[in-house]
Image: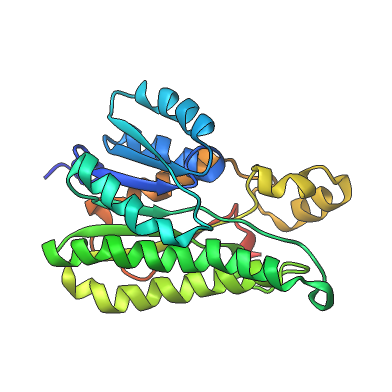
Length: 255
């Protein structure tokens, strides 16, 4: 078998949450470039339509499914709708996320609940419902989006750090149960990427200088930098990789 054929996603169906912009869109573009058909999920239908038009230019089928991951009761209907459109889901990318910055002593309980619900509970429920069919047929790839805060606590981001620490452990727990069933569960931990979520940092020259001193690559990443890692973990080239947290961070964790 030619080695490059192991990276082909031709004919596969990938569901990507938070897919209308940022890291989710970058990953969706990468998966489409490798041949996967896409089910794009995000809250805003208008931004999904824009992403759909851009990705369709790569010659794959792209359907959109507006869904708010903070409303976890809608996840079952989402999975049903994607299965009705495509027949099955071969690749699940749990990317949707949110954050809130505040001192621990002032952190509002409702914001804590919001962050945990979107970043962790929705991932658990979506993985459970999509993973059930993957286990039954003996194949599937699940890619969770972790964070550098899966490894460190951060500052003023207690809920986000807790949720992303949970993602790392959930990834390992699912891998332990499903590796023998033919399902690969892994995660990508992005470094500091130019997205809306990092806007506060990118607009602060002092913080940017501090981060540049810590990043060996001496630059922030872009959503496109996540595409190769996602294609790899979604492909047969990664068939013996289970429960791994792949850092794509410009060398941050090596410093």
